[in-house]
Length: 83
Image (cartoon, rainbow, N blue to C red):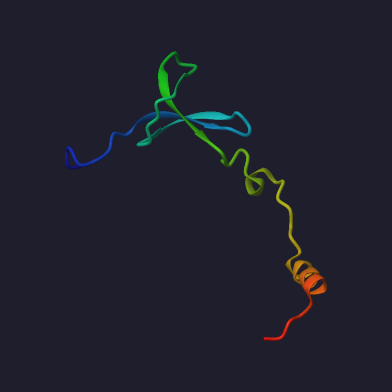
C-alpha cells in the first residue's frame, strides 16, 4: 500500500443499541465514545441502530407480507379510479 493515502485501520467495538450485543473488529470508523473491552484495553465505541443481531431477517422474526391483500384492501378502501 502507498503510505499516507489510506485511512487509519484500527480496532473498534460496535454495539447494537436494540440488543446490547457488542463485538470487537477492525474498522476505519472513529468515535469520541470509548469502552473498556474484556482484554483491559480501551477502544472507540460505535453504536448501531440495526445489526444482524436485531434485524428481523437475520433473527427469524421476519413477517411475510401479503402484497396482494394490501392491494385489494387499498382498492376496497379507495376504489378503483379511472385515469
